[in-house]
Image 1 (spheres, rainbow, N blue to C red):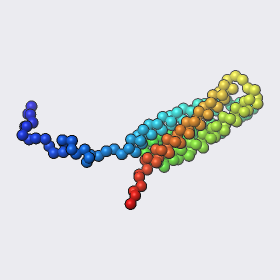
Image 2: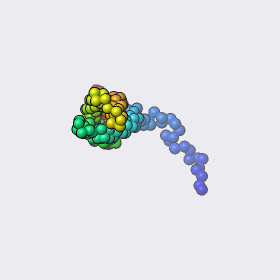
Image 3: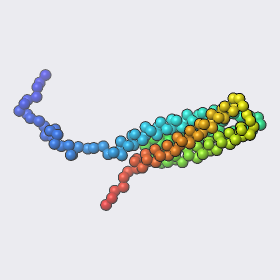
Image 4: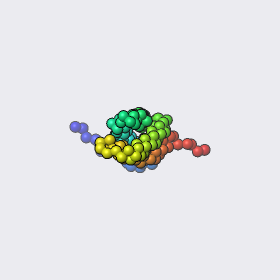
Length: 170
């Protein structure tokens, strides 16, 4: 192996004096990566809540009440919203993230409404057994989903503002 000649010296710009000219990653890019990972976790939790809500809504159908079509449809649409949010997060599309935010908020309001309505009708019928337990699980999931939705609104808003290019001041 050939050794470096001591007379060649150190190349210019490598003695540490060029630190002020080096590029530094803007803090908003590090915020974006942290918020993307948080949003992906929240989207995953929301998808699990939607799956549980979908299964509870479809399993608690009775002959007297009929099918809980609003709960089933809103849970299914919630899964589509989760997919839109994941695509927006993965491809860094602010418009998809805003669409996800608006649609998932509407879905979560509908799920909470369906859960409260089914809980009230369950108490009016004095139901017991498996259907009552499933409705209770659906109610708890809807309330947990509302908390997760609030966190998703905060994280998505911050992510969208950090993903948008900064305005140039004159």
